[in-house]
Length: 397
Image (cartoon, rainbow, N blue to C red; front, side, top):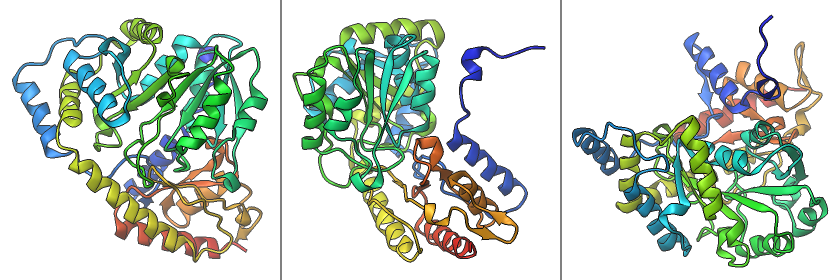
């Protein structure tokens, strides 16, 4: 009998991708499903970025790119980090990869080994804990509930640090919660981490520009820990470029070199055309970013207003990203006909099959009382989707 490796057998499939696939299967059968499970902007990539890609094709950028990315893209990233974040990096500290997902995984595989502990605040993005498993590390979960806006405290962080702690993953603005750490909150965490010089901080900032409370705050701004911070970002969310697959790290040189070595052996540099498009994204006009953020803010307010009419729902108002992450355990144990909802996964499946709305159960994010709704879709879709959810939930007795 042929068996997959232990490494693969230990992994869980991506719940977000699984729900999106189930939604597409129902659509293929003619069912009118509204998909709130997928985490990507519904906008098209701005024209000036597409034009740069077309020019790159005409200019014959069809050969292997450098493993860490083209120099003009790394320079554009360095300029962006200085201009927007006040952070100083050199181009050799930048590694461009096939999406921010690969950037996170590169960093973990480069620094984590058997027995190393990685602190992961919950709720977390589904892939973090699986990537730690891939690296043969041990996940140490800190639970941050809705009553604290899904954000961990310095005391919670201090309590789980051990001599085996090698890294912590922070995501702000957060997928799945939309929570955003303030400058003061990040400083509180930095003041704990400075006492533990062996801990690397992975700062996932892919939702940086979808932020409703003003200036983005990066934990890398605190000079006394910056030499241990790996900033992870990309073009997917801010510029509606999910399919272009370009992410990057800005890291201490030794980590950048390690990621370059790793990437050189298993993917090499990312798509040449997508890289040239990304240069235009970072160096070009930024009005598109503002317009999309304003649309997401309007949609957030619309969804929250609509959800206020749903009995038993608990909401932490998201300050960034494009997700609502409500607690809906009020409906656990309730039934509609012969169907009983025992948990969030049951509830997500019920809403898909009965309400014809695709969401994602919170267990995959380390929050078993919650569901994730993406509001990265049209106002019309959102109004119809929340109405369907409200009606389906009302049938549960």
